[in-house]
Amino acid sequence: MTLEETKAMTAEYIMATAKRLSVAWDKGDGVYLWDTEGHKYLDLLAGIAVNILGYQHPKMVDAMVQAASKPLHVTNIYHIPSQAQLAQQLVEASFPGKVFFCNSGTEANEAAVKLARKWGNESSGGSKNQIITTQRSFHGRTLAMIAATGQEKVRRGFDPQMPGFVSVEFGDIAALAAAINQDTCAIMLEPIQGEGGINLPPAGYLEQVRALCDEHNILLIFDEIQTGMGRTGKMFAYQHENIQPDILTLAKGLGSGVPVGAMIAQNGIAETFTPGSHGGTFGGNPFICSVASAVFQAIQDDDLITHSAEVGAYFLEALVKLTEKFSFLHNARGLGLMLAIDLDMPAGPVVEAGLKKGLILNAVQEKTLRFVPPLILQKQHVDEAIAGMTEIFEGLS
Image (tube, rainbow, N blue to C red; front, side):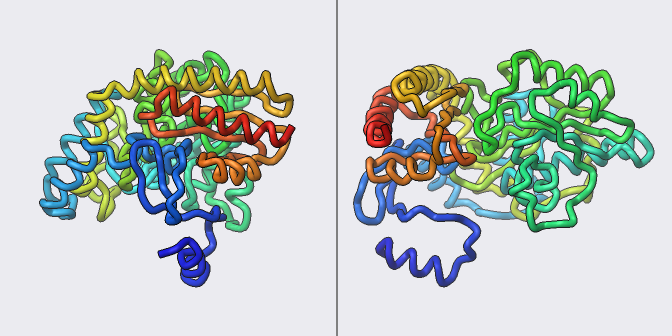
C-alpha cells in the first residue's frame, strides 16, 4: 500500500486523535526504518522510547517465534510460567516485592493509584486517598490519569475532573511538603519528566521526596514508563539515587514494541491487592511475557545499561556543542539516552526538515526536541544525527 493510499484510508476510517506526519513505515533493521517509498531513516524516537532493542533484534524475534508456537493467551485464573519468570526478573532488578501485569503505561499507573488508595483507606479507616503529583507531568490519558497529569492541555474538554489529585511544581520540595495533609496517601512523580520536556529534578530532590514520604507515612510512586529499562544508564532511573520507591510503574521499553505494562509494589504493600480487587483479561499473557522476558535478558546480556550511559554521554556532549554553535539552541540536557535541547522557535518544522534528511526527530512541548532512540544506538549513529541536524540548523541561521 502506498503512502497516499494509507493516508486516504486513515482519514476515512480512523479517528483523528493523532497529528500524523506524512510518512508510513514499511520495515526496520537495527536503528533504521524504511518508509513505503523505500527511503531510509535513522530513528531517534524509537516509537516514543519504546523500541529499545531497535528493529528485528534476533533475540526478540526468536522469542516471538517460539512464543507463537504456544498458547498466545489463557487467563490469570491459571498459572503462567513466562509471567512468573518476567516477574522474577523485574523484582530481582528492583526491590523485594510483587508485580501486577497489564497492557500499557496508563494501566500500570491506574493500578498504582488503586493500590495506593486502597492501602491509604484501609490504613486510615477510609479517608487517606489523596495523591500529590507535579506540574508538567504526564501519567496517561484515562480519566484518572489526566486528572493526575500536570498539563492543562491534556485535561481540557473532559470535565468534570476526577477528584483526589493535587498538583505542585516539579522540583519544589517546599511546595510538596505544604501540600501534604491528613488525606494524602501517596506522592506520584516521574524521576525525569518525559512528555513535560525531559525535565530533570534538582540535585537531592528525589531523596527529599522519599524522606517526606517516610516522615508522613505515605507511599512514593515512581512512574518510570519512559525512564525505565536502561533508558537513563541505570535499569531504573531511581537507582541513580540512594532510594527506593514503594511502587514502581513500567511500560514502553519493557516490551520493546509489544504492549505490556507492569506495576511493582514493595512487600507489605503489594498484599493490599487481594483476589478480585484488581485485574485484567489480557495483562501478563504468555506471549507478551515471553517476549518481554527476552527483552529483559537482552538488556543484560548485551550490557545495554552501560552502553546507554556511555553513548548518551557522547550524544549529550555533541548536543552541547550544537548550543555553542547556534545561538537559537539552548539547554542541552538529559541522562543516558533520554535527552533534549530547547529552541527559540517551534520545533515542529525541524522535525519535518529532519524527515527530509533521513532523521526521525521528535518535538515535545512547543520548542523542545526530545531524543529517546533505541538503546543499541552507536556513536557513529550519533555522528550521523548531529551532521544531519547541523545542516538543518545552518539552514535556519
